[in-house]
Image 1 (cartoon, rainbow, N blue to C red):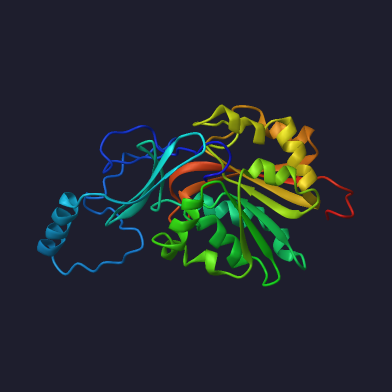
Image 2 (cartoon, helix red, strand yellow):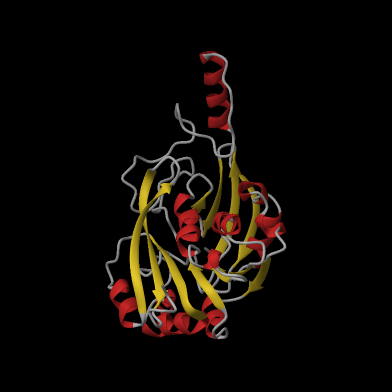
Length: 292
């Protein structure tokens, strides 16, 4: 999530925080206080309509709590906030990421690590940490011998994941297979030839950046060439995207020496609801015998 020169926004600019919707959503705005709205990480039993109504009323008046603030190198202010129903990270006051919808982040790991999990000692790079959901999904399918490197630009995001965000994904940073490299994911990729079996990129809105045009460098011809060089033979580059491919990213991947599959996934993976996001799964083309 928070790597490179800027962050991504999966929500359009909105007013009050109690109404949230990710970019590209065909669903009505989410109001955590409406009847039937799910509460992330909770399984509350309501004994009768009166109790349910009182709890909705209490939630409606409870303010958002600010848990932390941080400044990115480009000056963007990040704010971690909490409400009874969710956590939200804001960038300059705009909703960036919510704990309510993370199915597509988990799908990025599952699809990107399908080959790496079969290797003896796989090494995987995740850029960046976000709320830890991609990291947790990768750890759950990779072997005990794996190494997972997380590139994260903002030290506070790591601290938040060691603190209040940790329980959301069952404390993935406590896993001994994980190491954090603070810095720009593009620089880490460029300095890591033949190091990784899989690269999982979740930066900005994907190949069509929302927050910073400078993130294009990860997805242009040079960025694709750097990713290929950082992968071991038959390694996989998996890229999260908010849209289907309006800028010819799949074409650039194929021209850069990758075989490509495009997977459309739901933001709420298990429920198969929420906005649709795209995962580009690109395997480095080497000899047919190597990549069977």
